[in-house]
Amino acid sequence: MSVAGWFLVVGAVMAVMAMTAAHVRRFSISSSMVYLAAGIALGPAGFAVFHFNPIARSGLFEVLTEIGVIISVFVAGLKLAAPLGNRSWWKPFRLATVTMVISIALVAMFGMGFLGLSLGAAVLLGAILAPTDPVLASDVQVKDIRDPSTLRFSLTGEAGLNDGTAFPFVMLGLGLLGAHELGDHYLRWLGVDVIWATTAGLAVGGLLGALFAWIIAHLHRRGLSSAFTEDFSGLALIAIAYGAALLLKSYGFLAVFAAGYMLHRTEHHLCATEDETDERDPHMTLVSLRFIQPLERLGEVGLIILMGGMLFADSWPVHYLLLAACLFFVIRPVAVQLGMLGSGIHRRDRWLMSWFGIRGIGSLYYLAYALQHGLDGPDAVVLTSATLVVVTTSIVLHGVTVIPLTRRFSDD
Image (tube, rainbow, N blue to C red; front, side):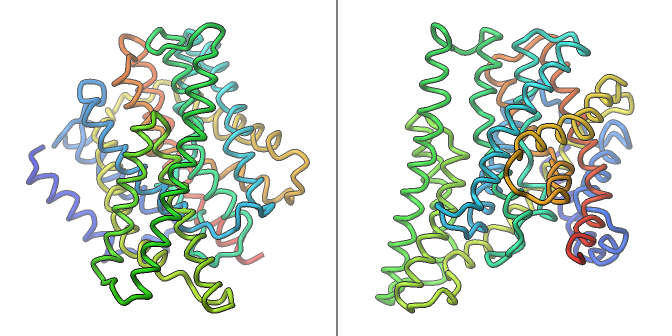
């Protein structure tokens, strides 16, 4: 499809959503389902207006999904208000580490036992499918910076963190396939890919977020800021944090998430110091959210339509559907229950966390990254097909259940 065609399609879908949003919500389905339906209708499973081959065009695929995830993890970080020392952080931290590792292990076992994958390909599949998605999970995320919901905080924090914490296991899978250096006894992987890349990414992002908040506050006090300053500072912070993290050979997603979070927390601290109260909302945080969230939505529209154009009418082998069913009905619930042992979370919230493990753009990015960094041959075909089936299934299953469940949860 031509560039003009893409503009027309994305614009038409957005126009339809803008004019029918109330009706879509009335049917209790997510907007992602509408975008997916449009992509399938235009793709090879429908009228064959376009087809996007993620293996042949993995470079473009990686860049597009990378941009989508970067913006979404920054927004997730901006929304979180709890101080770092607050006990609330233990829940998303455990979801993004313990629960995620259990999920990777169980998916890898399925891949070896039912899909005939090697250990490396199975671990890579587990890492690709492990992270929950900050792009498609807006209905279960923190609604604004004052949202008091512990469940929403946990799910938002998990989605922001595990798009970075899954990266070491992507590198492990590639290493086991011979496409990445793991070192003797996995020491290089542990030291560089796990410890250094994770801590450096969080540190550089957090420092830059705090620095930006201080600079913008200083300019604002001196009357030197403008609407342009406020609108583009968020985008500048995203770019600088991501670029700095990559230069340090660390994880850019974690850096951008930490930058968004520390921008919010530092501005909140400065506001409280000036006013001797916690009631004033951080202005820069709110401006960044208003400016960047529409970009997140635009990315969601384009990427989901693009994914619909990857699907064929026969893209649904039973073993991939079984993987999706096992992931959502067995693996995710087991991983959450084990990861949250002793957390004190109410049983209902644990089961809601178990179901709200939405897979989406993050998994597509890791697939694209793997394709660009050594995943090829039959393994590339299997992992691509499995990922597309799982993400599509997630959009449908969660698309028809998330809104009714969140309404019931809000009413209780």
